[in-house]
Image 1 (cartoon, rainbow, N blue to C red):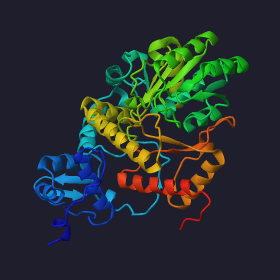
Image 2: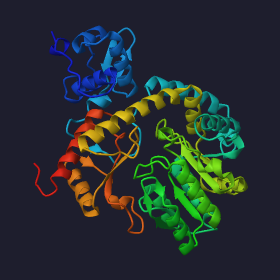
Image 3: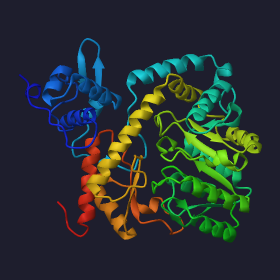
Length: 452
């Protein structure tokens, strides 16, 4: 008899729900090579006996592993280990620089969404050369999703584009005629830095605290530079990971009104919002370019971005969109819309929020952090430290097979905050994240030792 059929299934000690601990124990057996690609797992009843839990608990654990793409069920045959997950080399490179969710959408859900999308796309007029903003139906689906989850908008108020990065670029380009200076935190999203650089625009660093830009500092920067653009990510600021509360948002908005400044609001992480604050767009529709996408809340494979600009700028942005790409790919838009119509985003959101919460707690425990800006969970966590120490840590971690975002990748004007960004949702397997975090902790706590 196979040893894995008789040995106890040892559950990790943690405060996680029981089914998540069962899933983590099975995942550990896969990572260690005890279960290999194509292996069939024991029955639910056998796993329940090994773990000393109810069958229902095992069923929930198996569903969780399946949603992460680690295992698959075959009707009438059993549950099998997916080769793509099991063949990851134990001890291989763990990349914590990619700020995306783990692959948790089941293949069957992708196939159902794709089949639906192909049917709809095939009936589009002119072979898909329809409305370059996205068809009326596509914009209706996306506006409905936004209105239910974050911001009440109508189909005619948005343009669909190729991800949030594209939307940021469009917004910056549209605003360049009124200002070539963009005020933002001293550490900000590398994609925004790249967009500004490509457009020949200047990013001006604004002093901040754990909740966002300081209103007095923003006032001073806008006064000194004459800038009229503010870029901000108010939920899970990238890379610093904080969330801006209502009082601070209103104070920042008051400064922008004083200077006649526009806000480019990057709300791509709104799924993780804990404070439930009103968006800048809802506060001032005519002076905010609102940006989001499905990449962080569903999958990066659905490169569907949304831009809700001031009403008077929609036509100008539509012309720019036409000049660049004639709108996003119709089939990609249809797949994103199909996932929303099928309700796939709802189950994904629950899993991502639970996974983010568990990974945040794991990070806090291993790195002995006293405080997390968003303790309920976020896709990235900032590990503060002196600038030179951060650069050294990133270099040494890379030598040990753990890739980290160095501080210079997110710093502007020499004002970036010392530290490294940890994209804790990036590794598909929590076991790989734990290994990477222990390497980071070891290197941080022994900065001058040669660790073998």
